[in-house]
Length: 266
Length: 269
Ligand SMILES: Nc1ncnc2c1ncn2[C@@H]1O[C@H](COP(=O)(O)OP(=O)(O)OP(=O)(O)O)[C@@H](O)[C@H]1O
Ligand SMILES: [Mg+2]
Image 1 (cartoon, rainbow over the protein chains, first blue to last red):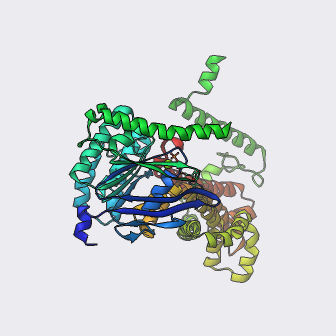
Image 2 (image 1 turned 30 degrees about the vertical axis):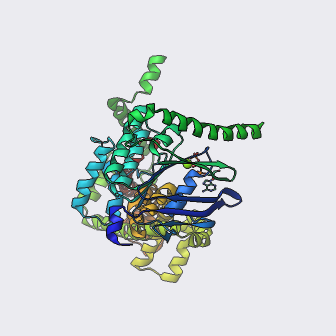
Image 3 (image 1 turned 135 degrees about the horizontal axis):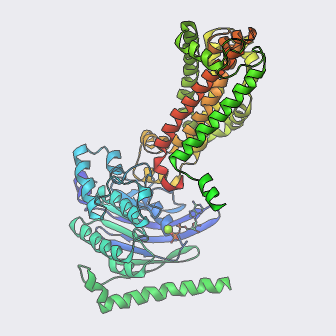
């Protein structure tokens, strides 16, 4: 893998082959087979607790898998890899660091020159709409602002693979919409492989080139839906008849699961 | 009734400081009255009459402003305190974090640490005396032992409670172990450690006096001993005030640091 190709984000590709994960006796998912292509946005939906976060952790190299293997650009993942960044569901900000320091965290670790940090950090802080809050501490920010800070921290690394765990869950509806299109814009400027976990079916269909539906207990891939909507995606996409069709399809697929769970409970 | 309650619970600065002042005055007055009742070999008043009842405050003034030998003793004590306490800091802080990072080492040592944390260190003084003798360094060891375990214990508990989410972020961004310390472990642990440090300051002061009392006498411990042997209660009480002053200053300093380094805790403080 040449350094240039990696910097271009040209060759990112993730293969997930027969992957299973257990926590002690709890089998979270099994036999997951997926392939994420270069510059593709894949969204993952599934009921709460089905292992979406766990899967992202495995892809990021934070957790070992129990069965199968995950490869990025051909290399088996055993630990976090350069060029792969993650946005955490729990935000994971450092409370003693300001927004500026939190966003610059990854660059500083990577040994980036000061000038580069001084240039990129304000750019991405601005991009996620946190301009003016550079010197605020996380406890002074709302949940949505903290989440955007975490997003900026990952974007600043300009990764070739971006893993996002419900990055807009704590953001209000309007900001969420702005950020969704902003993220698509960033992606068009610097295409990268994006794996995007969300609870919102609308968001999954709007953002994804493909939508992966996880289901079952232990869960596995129930369906992979190609979202054949015209590019670029923007507000008008939401009104596209095909959008509604796919959304309803995903909804029904997931609804069966919810019903089954309810049935189990009764 | 309501107005009384409002006044009593008022958080205005002048009410607060007025209350403190009144309380101190009342205490001082009580001391003065009681002190004047007794023979000077049993109890000394705060101010006294300078004849049959020498006062504590005049003595304190003489000690601090007109008695180079006493100042030397004070300096000696501070030196002992600073050396023992400084060593305890230097060793307990990193050791506490290391123990939090190395589970096996912690499990192996945990019960010993807890035991020593609750051991009244004063009980160890005879051993130190018989093994190490009367030098400066055995005394340092006493102060060190008094201070070490509160710092270690609090640092360890703090470092252990570091949120796994933060370590996960560090791992995801491929942090080195060194950077994990500077970015996460140290800033996270500092407020906990400072609680231990404040506790340790009080204990180290006890250790200092005990060491100067029971090992080779020196410093304020010696002053205390000489005065009490001469039934000079004004001298005893004045020295106690000096030690109290040292303790309070130290706690205040640690408190300032504690505030500074726990500001990030914001509302969940
Ligand atoms: N560290 C852990 N140890 C043991 N069990 C865990 C651990 N982390 C998660 N689990 C369990 O694994 C399952 C999947 O958790 P995970 O967080 O991946 O779900 P999720 O799909 O991300 O859920 P949500 O949509 O609510 O975020 C859950 O049943 C959870 O209780
Ligand atoms: Mg999750």
